[in-house]
Image (cartoon, rainbow over all chains, first blue to last red; front, side):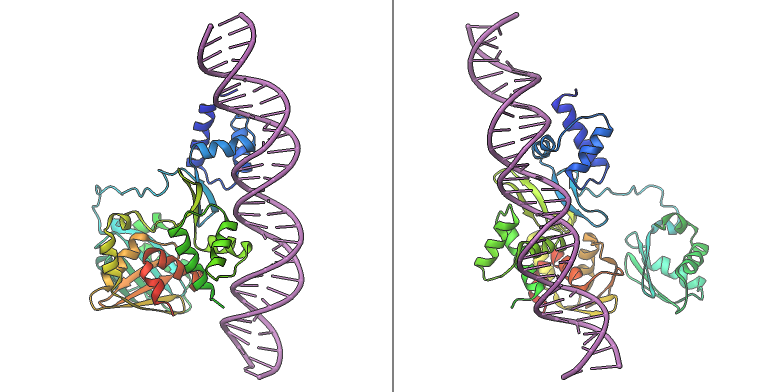
Length: 160
Length: 160
DNA sequence: ACAAAAAATGAATAAATATTCAAATTAATG
DNA sequence: CATTAATTTGAATATTTATTCATTTTTTGT
């Protein structure tokens, strides 16, 4: 049988690496790793570790380790060689598409799109780090994505 | 009786000002303030507000309002207040929300929202006195309002 | 090493929280 | 308005989490 401290380290690791939303789930998860534990002991361990339960859009409420909770890692500044490295994300809502970019990149990227002027897009508006694309009616999202990838191949790797 | 959003604002305030460790306690607390609520509804409200339960050395586990973003925390309280004093109005149209601000305030407020990056919002664009928010599909207005209040508590007083 | 004390644990159970389902309220549509 | 659709809510209940209590394991002092 593992020691108490080893078990708690395993609990911490499990919470850091997976989204766990109940103690029973965590018990099963730990048992699969060869750690015998009951829900009662786990409840005590979680308190010892000061584990919190916080909201996660994907999975509802999940357990989180206090310190590691909201650390936003900064991307490295190295390797920005091309304009479209400024691309961060593409999302849709209704007949709009939104491109999130690195700060300052939005207007250059919008200009690039304007120059290419794909017929799927009837207009663009750029802020500092956001480009808004107004999509022509009746255009499918997949078609617009393909059209944008033609202009900015880097985008291909950033579609979720 | 009180509206749903008013009730949720009261819940938020209660959690911010007192250490509450159970929903039954919170129900009693709210009833003392003249707000009728059952545990079932409170449970749903807490989820809507993304309230977490975290360890507190003095009182064990208590409910906490999640922090909107790390950078927000670094700014001075006065700075945030000053900024969000620029807020004038919030209106909706379809999947868009428009914040009217005092002249010149829009981009700073947009930056504040971008930093917090709530998942309900897929992008923002700022003019001089107007911020356009593009809302993720399927998000309810009340949920977006709650999310924005997390970032700018001043907003709570400006909702009809 | 041995006995006594302290800490850890599991099973059962109490307490707290989430969900179901039916009713009530509110919003949308003609 | 009237009617239908959608959302909100409470009571009851299911699920999840914390605690009690008896027992086992570990630690301490001699």
